[in-house]
Image 1 (tube, rainbow, N blue to C red):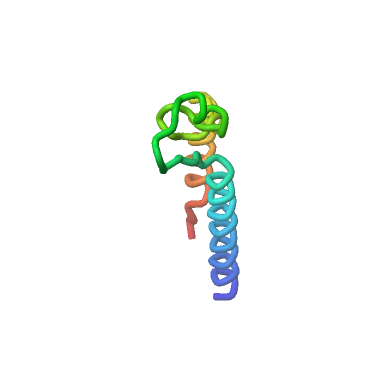
Image 2 (image 1 turned 90 degrees about the vertical axis):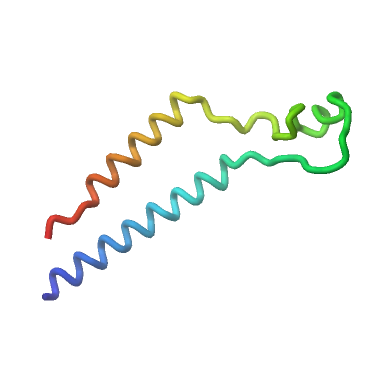
Length: 83
């Protein structure tokens, strides 16, 4: 009984750690959108936004996004408890 309790606690802590890591990654890579009065394209670029209102330079290349998704799927498969 004690072993299964410890195993459940370990799985819970690992899941919480992965969730914290995912939230931290999302916070760092979130794109900011400008919503306000319409400005010229030059002014938007001066304050760091593109024409569509999203911030400049916060995009992630598709290859890295796919690589990260594969790592996340592998983690999920490894976390499946067999007990």
